[in-house]
Image (cartoon, rainbow, N blue to C red):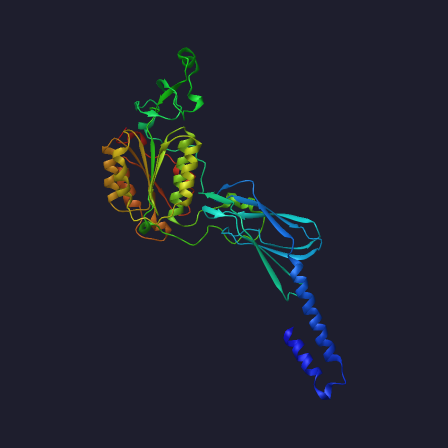
Length: 424
């Protein structure tokens, strides 16, 4: 536009063209358009506000996450067009839109949908609004920041059955250890101290003593369940495949059932760990978690939804960036585990050290369960078949998960000759 204005003005000054006023008129017209566009752009985004909200702050991989976008025009001037761009880390969402015709002192609302394909913490910000004149000569940009975050927990399957070794059936030995949790096993009473939950007050004793008396509890005699997740960087096979094609539709609810994990051993391992933790928590068991990814992490065994929330939050942020092998991780913790506890090992490792550490687990009076991710099915060699056969020959419960397998189907599958386990 500036170039055309300059050329028109130049041509209007040439002596042999001066009798024709068309060029000066064209130059003036272009200048008027430029000035009007600049003024239009200056007021095009004034008075615009954005509210971005959601009803949930935690969702699962494979689910559809919805957000409400409300664009408010507090100016008396209408806005011809506004381009909203979602600059958060969420991918493949419909939060970015182009809307037109927002009247003065009016608002416009729409829903953005995102099919969650990646676990972790995500900040629902920033959001950018662009606007300008109708000719597209000028553009103004306004950013809106927010502190609202979304936790995307790992993909989980709802297992109805998972092979429980005989050693952890009800009726195990009493641990005789005090616990802060309320269990069916009362150990006695003591005087109330500040910080004790009111629900632990024993009112008959308090009335008799004329002071507050609280109950003490012992741990449930059921043995604990420990999940050891291999997060060693060198053993995992990664893929950039998200597990889904490019979806350019908003009808993503129907894709939820078709969601599949990417061919990534780390994602399979984390999903399996989350699913097993959810299963045992639903069985009112105490579940602990140990892993050595970007940080060495140990969650002591507890029961209840609060413990499941801590496990899922930890797994959501876990990255397979560690250098400690799974047998080293197990050796650092097994000496502290109670006899009869179940030890679930999840790893793509094929080294013979797995067999050795499994035998040590059995000798310590613990119950091993091995879940092997077959590297050959993820594009690497060798596979886990030989190791799985050796473990099964020793009477160890062993599952082999391959790329593309239905995790629920594999983990619910009965083990052959289970009634002849060496630790029965």
